[in-house]
Image 1 (tube, rainbow, N blue to C red):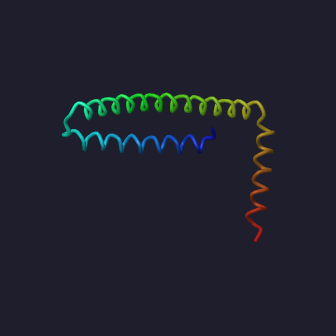
Image 2: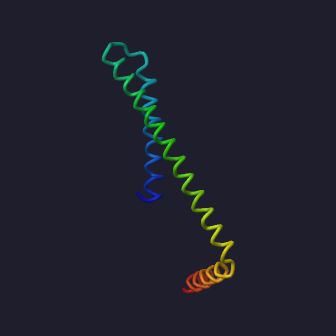
Image 3: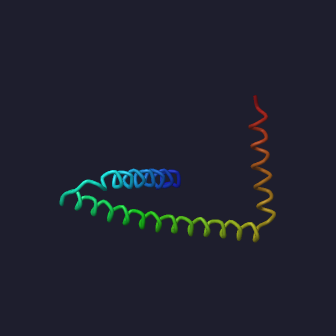
Length: 100
């Protein structure tokens, strides 16, 4: 799963949890064993979903930190190669932006 998909999934999950919380609040005055059981199951699933999302966000942050550290290490070990690559990318972008 790519980063954009993960971010979209996280955003959709947050919207869903917000809607479920709103539904739970709206049905708080409803009585009955079946409604109470459903509310309890929804609350438990919502909490489990939040926990999973939190764990995934932590894992993603750790991977991003590892990637940053790896890139920084490469730059420190190969400064002139990095300068050459940056100059090449700048030249290509400049040529592409200049074309009309």
